[in-house]
Image 1: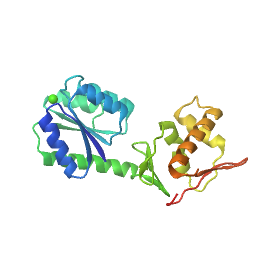
Image 2: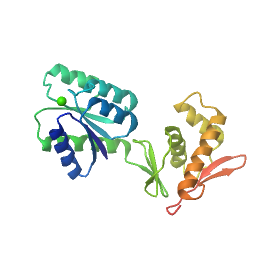
Image 3: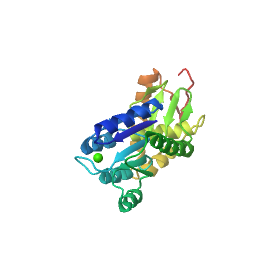
Image 4: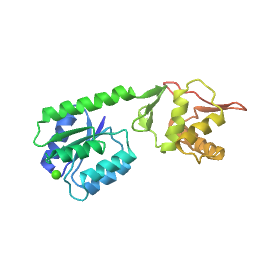
Length: 226
Ligand code: CA
């Protein structure tokens, strides 16, 4: 589980990170609002622990950004602002929990556990097919434990194959699936996307696990050794 801690009090930020790392989480830290903005734009997390008073960008603006771009991420607000109006505003903007400073690390750990447990119940962790593993929350796929460098659209396409193992999937079905994400997708677009996906899979697996079944569609075949 990946956690981002955004807190400008460096000592507090580092002690939270150290504590949660000991609990077994993968933790990244940042001390500045603009740095947090870039990470939220470019990286993936299961949970963001977010201070509200930050240099560079307000925590509530960051919260709004997360809610627009990553509605599935959990957000725990950390703030010295103890006024209930801030708490209400934070929760209204979509924070999942709120902790007022000062707090004990034990309490933070318990709340993190609770949020991430809810998350894993919700998504029931990852989807596995042979050597491929899809993290539906982070929209990432690994092959033999190695992350594949796929675009979000490629992940969306591969996810369909992984969720329909052993089935020959007609091109029209793939088109309908892709149009649920982006209505402007054309059959040519799906064809191009599929070619790019197959090329990337071939590079990692040293063979193409998607087979063309003439006149019928496509079949993904992977085993653990693939
Ligand atoms: Ca602060």
